[in-house]
Amino acid sequence: MSFWVLIFLIALLIAVFLGYTMLRGRRAEGPTAEYDLRVYREQLAGVDRDLARGVIGKADAERVRTEISRRILAADAQMRGEGESVGPSRTVTIVAFALMGAVLIGGALAMYRQLGAAGFPDIPLSARLEMAEELRINRPSQTEAEDIATPIQTPPLEESYKTLLDRLRETVAERPNDLQGQTLLAQHETNAGNFKAGYEAQTQVIALSGDNAPAHAYSNQAEMMILAAGGYVSPEAEEALRNALERDPKLGPARYYWGQMLSQTGRPDLAYRVWVDTLRDAPAGAPWGDAIRTQIDDLAFRAGVFNAPDIAASPAAPGPSQDDMNAAAELSAEERQEMIRGMVDRLSDRLATEGGSPDEWARLIAALGVLGEAEKAISIRDEAVTVFAGNNEALQMIDAAALQAGIAQ
Image (cartoon, rainbow, N blue to C red; front, side, top):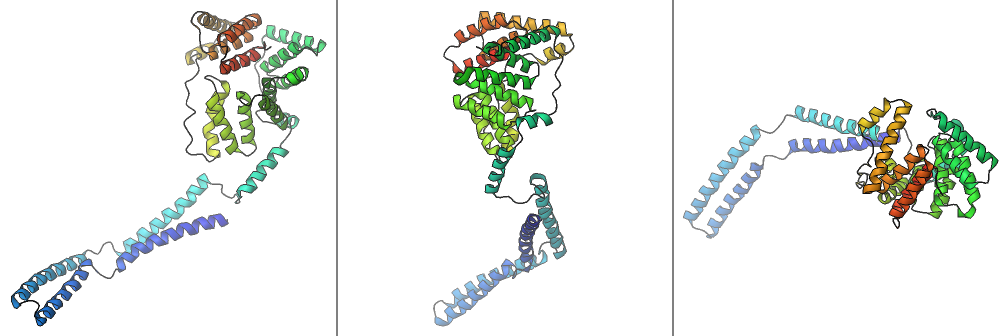
């Protein structure tokens, strides 16, 4: 309430100051011509004094008197004209002052109600930082978040894919120390929407890899945890992200989720900086770059950044048109599968003959994994690694697609 009173008093003070200026103009000492009359009368008296001392002759004195008299008459006529048009009446001035005060006070209160935090007490920056840190430390765990998360509705699996997934589960259960099997299980459980089973398998992948576990293994583990928790970055997911960034500080997906964690724990200012740097480094078509572009304007507003650089604009990655998507929605599962296969074949032929961007190679690898053509996906991946040898950003996209296709090494 004290803040509202302060806003009201400041706006009222400004209105009173402006109103006083308006009313003061009506109480001026007189028209400007009145000052001229006083000057001319003093000049006449000066002519008489000069004539008495013999400084000027009678003829000159008469000529000067005539000129000054002419000016006095003109100033007197001007003063009478100004007296007839003294401006708006006092009533009009008071009404204008009241309207101005209402606009200033009402506008200030309305703007604060729209942009401010009405009813929220004033909190110093140091206290806000302490609250953010306390929120980060005491936020719900992964298990608690999963218990309250809204279950994700996933489409039913095709019978053939479901059979292969069940067989993979049985094989991994018989050979729990098989690194490749755990890797495949983690990826395909995630593809099927079983995110908890996915990150549990990914945890086994990291355990079996030991100190040799790469950064993307931890990043994938964190992503599966976040998906299982409905987009929430738990302390366990934060630890996985920390491990990923310690191994590769430039890993795009981990940096994206790290910014998301900062945003969720009351530090949008730090999250904005992380996302801006991540977006600048993101290769064309990177999924984490697209995710940042859709959210960074809102994050910039929360961070108090109103002159954000225009880094969000980026040409869209090549993909199916809206007509293709509408047509696919009307097809049966078998027809849709054939349509996807046709698009994959055309993309494969074009890359083989004309080449393409790293994003197109990555999309082809991921699509082959969805179609279950693991051997062909491995062949395409090996070819892409050769084509983009030395291009770290491109190789990073290829590795991510291979992981999505379940053929990561």
